[in-house]
Structure formats: structure tokens, C-alpha cells
Length: 129
Picture (spheres, helix red, strand yellow):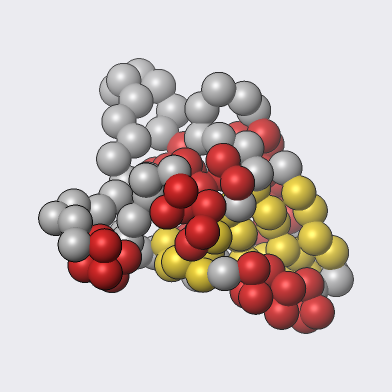
């Protein structure tokens, strides 16, 4: 069995990269592999917005990531630089920026490329979507 890091570069909606990343992650877990962490990078950080509100009959990819993370204790990490550039803030970043609102909450944590690099050392494979 292998240990993976999943890097999601694709936006939550507009292309299929994030959906494929989610399905790959689910399949890897079901096959007995380990997921060290899911790292949202570039437009992939849009997957972390808790304010995504698709129509009730549409798939909510943010909620799917959250449920998968809670069910399997996955670490979901947002690249903080990419997130801040795109208006995605945790409560801590909102306080630091003097903003009253935020849209990234647990289980997603903000991190840097260091989390990606240190994870790459520990993981067998990095899979990018």
C-alpha cells in the first residue's frame, strides 16, 4: 500500500479537476492506501470555501471534502498565499487583516508550501489534479 499526497489545483467548479481529485482520494482510501494530506493550491483553494452554496440538487464539493476528511481523518491544507490572494480567509487571517468575515473553517487549515514539501518527503506519491 502507498501513501499519497493529493494536490488539488483545479477550482471547485468550472472544471473537473477537483471532482476527480475527490473521487481518486475516495478510491485510494477504499483500496487501502493512506492519504497523508490533501493540499489545495492555486485555484484549488476555492474548494475550501465554506460559503460555496450550489443549488440543492447540485453537488457540493466543499461539503464532500469536509465529510471525507472527517470520516477518514484527512488533513486538508490550504496554501495560505494562494488563498489570501483569492479572498479565502480563516478566522485567524481575517483577524490579522482586520476583516470581520472569513470563509475557511475546520477541518481545513491554512499552511504553506512547507507542508507540501515535508509531506512529499514522507509520502510515496504526489498526485496532482
